[in-house]
Image (cartoon, rainbow, N blue to C red; front, side, top):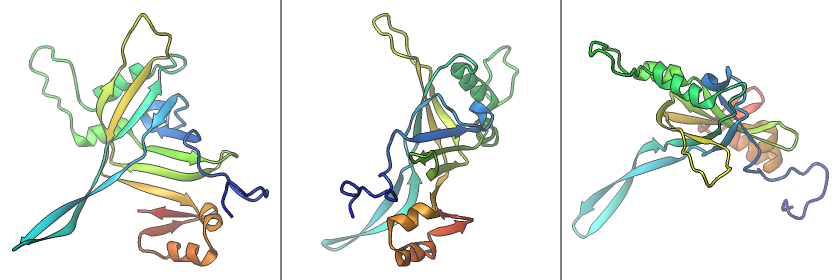
Length: 205
């Protein structure tokens, strides 16, 4: 039965874009970043290569590239100053303001990944339970925007963070999957080589 005609108590609502929580280890001691305003989901692009033969062209799939993720944060100032936290991430990556010309410290991937820490976004249902989680692997910051000032606005200060990563993993709750499709289909998805079961959850990896 379609969700827009179902009224029984066991039917779940479709996923809502406003029901989510963000976790970034470096911004809230591995807790929920409650001041996150938006988080663009990961997206994957499959490159293609073309082989020409006489008057014909044949296309073949190539490598997979994961696109950057953009995160918007409100700066709460108390008890956390988001602008200062982002500046600390930049410093922890290995960047330092030039002083006397003898500072040889540089940015590296090892320090950049450690500076950001684990990062994930979870979609939740009306009861606050996680039904979908995206985890970015080996992620690091590539762009920080501290916003702008303007006299003709009363908007909250919004900071933007662009994150690059090597790949993403999606975890979908087993209960949600069973409710969404038939038991036979759920078992088929679980046994698919694209999923791995972890406890009561299935992971697309």
